[in-house]
Image (cartoon, rainbow, N blue to C red; front, top):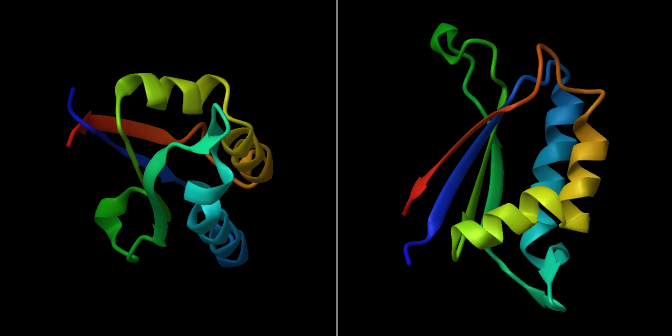
Length: 104
């Protein structure tokens, strides 16, 4: 079964809120647990370069999962992901983030 690489793009206008999100993603591999063990293989977020082609997206988060099932757990049951969503919900503008995922 291939690993899953997931990219999540956010439109967060305030640079301080972008930095807050980057800090949350930095600790995600340790904070996110499934069956009592960390399950996210890699997580990081970075500020997008200011460029007209980015269509207003200011933050790109990358996560790597061992399987699609782990990604589904992250979306539906992970408490650490729930904290990120709660933290960013009021800070993201122009609808929900764009999520893309593919086999790694």
